[in-house]
Length: 485
Image (cartoon, rainbow, N blue to C red; front, side, top):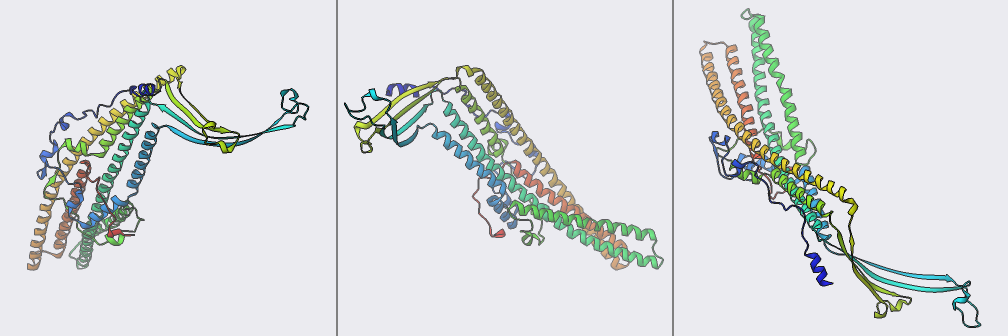
C-alpha cells in the first residue's frame, strides 16, 4: 500500500504556472525618471518618506492622520476582509489532510420468532420464545483522504494565498486613501478659515466705504451711482461668508467621520484657525519603478492576476479522476465489555476512484471561463499600472505649476501691500480721499484672498502627489490624545 500511495502522491500539478507580473510600463520599470518631475524645480529623485504628512510641519494634522489610520472604518473593513481571506487559506490548506470522524452507537434489537418454528430457536420439545433480544455495541473511527494527484487542491491553496495577499494590499490601499483624504479635508478647512477671515475684513471695509459714500452723497460730493456701486461690492463680498462657513462645516464633519467619530466631535479641536500647512522646500519623489512596486493598488491587481491564474489549474484538474483513500477501524460486539478488545476489532482500508466522464463539456466550459477571467485580470493589472503612471505624472505637473502660481500671487500680494502703504501715506498728506484708501485696501485683501486659495491648492496638490506615489501604508499607528474618546 505504501508504494502505491507514494506513486499517487508523486502526481503532477495541472494548469499554467504563474510566471510573475508582466511588464506593463517598460520605460518606467527600466528605471527612467518621471517625465514631469524634470520640470519641478524642488523635486529630487530620492525615496520619499512613508509618513509624508509629517513633512508639512503641522502637529494637529499629524495627530488626525495617525488617528484615522488607527480607527477609520474603511481601514477596519479592509482589515476584516483580510482576516476572512486568511481563514479561507487555512481552510483550503487543511483540506489536504485526511478527514477523521469518530462514531459510536448501542442498539437493542427485538426480533419476532414465533413463526420461525423450524429455525431451531427452541430446544427439543421445548417452547418456542415469542421474541429474541440482541444487543449490539459499536465504536469506530472513519477516515477519508482525497489524494491531490493532479494538484487541484494545491491550485486552490495558491489561489487563496494570492487572494489573501490581495486583501493585505487592499488594507494598505485603504490607508493610503484615508491619509490623503484627512490631509485634503484639513487643508480645505484651514484655507476656508483663512479666506473667511479675509472676507469678513473686506466686508467691514466695504461697509465703511458705503457709509462714507452716503455721507458724501448727502453733502453733494458723490452721486447715487457711487453709493450703489459700493453697496453692490459690499453685498457681493458679504455673500461669500456663508458659503465659506458651509465649507468649514463640511470639512469638520468629513474629518470627524474619517477618524471614526460623529460629526461635531472634532469641532472644539479645529475651530481655532491655523495657517495652511505648506509643503517642504525640497520634495522627494523617487522614480516610477519604485512607485510601481510600492503602490498597493498595483500590488493588489498583481495578486488578483495570480489568483486568476491558479483558478485555471483548479478547473483543469476537474478533467481527471479523483482518488480517495478511505478507512475504518473500530470494535463491534454484543457485549459492551468487549469494546476495545482485539477479538471485537474490525477494520477496512482501500482506495476509491470517481470520474465525471460525462461532464467533460461542462468542465471544458469552466476552463474557458477561468482562462477568460485570467485575461481580464491581466488587462486590469496593465490598466492599473498605466493609470498609476498617469496619476503620478499628472500630480507632478499640477504640483509644479501650482507652485509657480503661488509664487506669482505672493508677488502680487506683496505689491498690493506696498500700494496700500503708499495710499495711507498720501491720505495722511491729504492728497487722496478715504474712499480711495478703502478701495486700495479692498484690492489688497482680494490679493490675499487669491493667495490664500492658491496656497491651499498648492498643499492639496502636494497631498495628491504623495497619494499618487503610494505613500502612507504599513505603518504602526495608535490612537492619539487629540481625539481621545
